[in-house]
Length: 84
Image 1 (cartoon, helix red, strand yellow):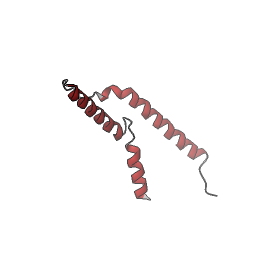
Image 2 (cartoon, one colour):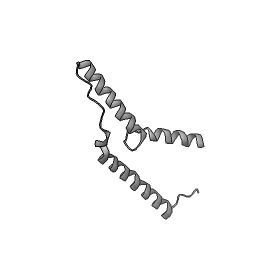
Image 3 (tube, helix red, strand yellow):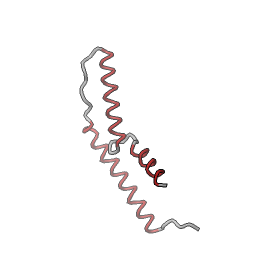
Image 4 (spheres, one colour):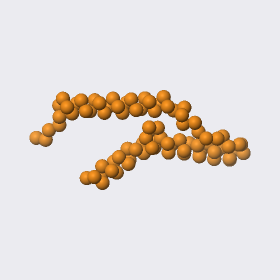
């Protein structure tokens, strides 16, 4: 059961949203794609991707995750799941 939980958390963490590790992987992949396109076009290296510009998106995602967590905790306290 602990192994299944560990794998589930691993997969969830790889969702390409910036607060999660998948967001950083997506930013690195985007930077590699930009560099490859610039190299094929014979242009100069475009430089690193500024992931800090996505901070507003990150804050919205963190707020959504926090609100959904609070709602689920509230629902569990008010009407807990019971096995019948």
